[in-house]
Image 1 (cartoon, rainbow, N blue to C red):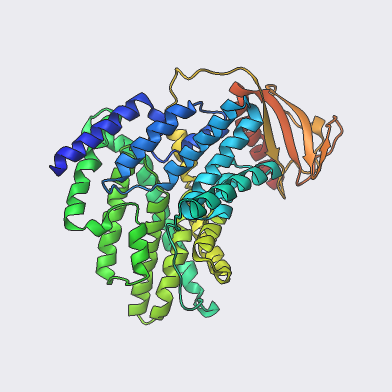
Image 2 (image 1 turned 60 degrees about the horizontal axis):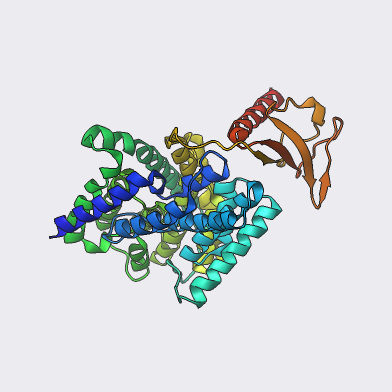
Length: 459
């Protein structure tokens, strides 16, 4: 009976995926592609199919998270509002970004982290207008979810004592471990579609049958391991299992997370990443406690810190990771250890050549040739960060892409009309006018230009 039910669910989801391929996976790469001008999707088609497909995929206990789908659903709502009010260009992207922030804020009860996730991971722009719009959406969504529906945060953990500074060497060592396993997670996740094709020879929409059938085995023998992992994480607050049990939990969750997400089913990796990070922290804490190098009262500290470190390494979004755990725990005293472990894991993944996972998934995504290219003017904003090679350059000295025109420089509250001898300063935001179809190409050319200037400066 279970096999028949799961096969039926898998076929329903497969039909939804065949009609709308962009509901596959978490949906965060799709939102990022929308904001970058690389993808164009119909918001209503995404909204109802992602909602139904996500519920059918998450319901049986597959190792998927709900946070990614929540972000894509909310971004679709933002796109729907933009369509209703006939908004385009920057205004449309602002509403999509605001919706994405609202989705994560509702899922985690973390409006600040939801806002920063959009800025750091999705929009890649710390423009004040983006910040304020995303924050407004996140606060509104969080208020509704808490006060109207009465939802509680997915994760709420606490610890009895702060980690002493004398034990911070554990954070460095654990951060290195998290970075290594984070890089492994990236590599395996990105190769899963190819493995599915080689091993199953099934069409992409039907590959979800594999996790739908295999999850029955996990549910039969160990039902407490099913789902995205929030129950597992909260269980650590009551009891931390022995070392070998924790290792077995990590192996099972890692393997089935890859099988679940690699099939292309509608579901995210946000919460599975946090749960795997928590298990790694528990393994490390229990091992160090058995070796007499760590008091048992600090194991919970490492579990909480490891969630941030693992996400910071895989997503390469350390600020989001730090704020997300801060809002979940509700305590500001752990900002320093969170920063240490997150930056350590980030640096390890960066040194190994790992890319932000959602950006890598977007690049891997096959773009349908039938997507209609819209020819209309659009704005591209380029922030000038501290130490940027653009600092001190004159506008006429820069070989701007011929497909774009520099029409403004936002400097604080002022809008500067650029001339040939206008100097570019740190903190400026350059506003370029280009065609929607050329937006990605222009951005890539400017990134390549900046990389060349930085290399010349070093030489």
